[in-house]
Image (cartoon, one colour):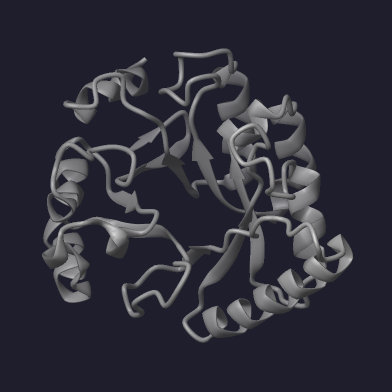
Length: 241
């Protein structure tokens, strides 16, 4: 769906969860979206939904692009055609120096980037707010860029999750202006509450204007909680404003 000069996709691990996993891509398409993203689709509880072929088939049948996936904590099934892979940085350990942990993270991100490069994919590094994840060390856009700069790879980029940045009181237009050329993907939710745009305090007209200038037609993922969790499609009214 295109609006505000942006191309939006739906995160089907937080929206359309009232439906079985394999039905969510078609629901997103019916709601007017050409792209979807997921967190860990193969970790969902229904055994038949863990089958990679069935998952890819559901995407193909719906005619949607798989925009982004998280790396799994263990082995993620390969070959699902996704070119944006979110590598969560990990939590701090008390008994290991922070510098050593950052060095290890850079090494692991490099390994991931090298493998991702084989299929033309980008590894994403996300900042997450410290209120919900107090041991996660990458809590700002500057933290994320610093982590990316420690990796000797061209295909590691910033995942700008605007909910987490706003939760940490970042100036969103300022962060997008500073780091726009480093952004590999954007995710959107209002703050507080992680609801749809217009349910919180973020001034979205200003943010969307900055995004449209920086991401130039790239995907922006809707990663918010629907007001009515039994009817996710009712949460898209703001897109017509």
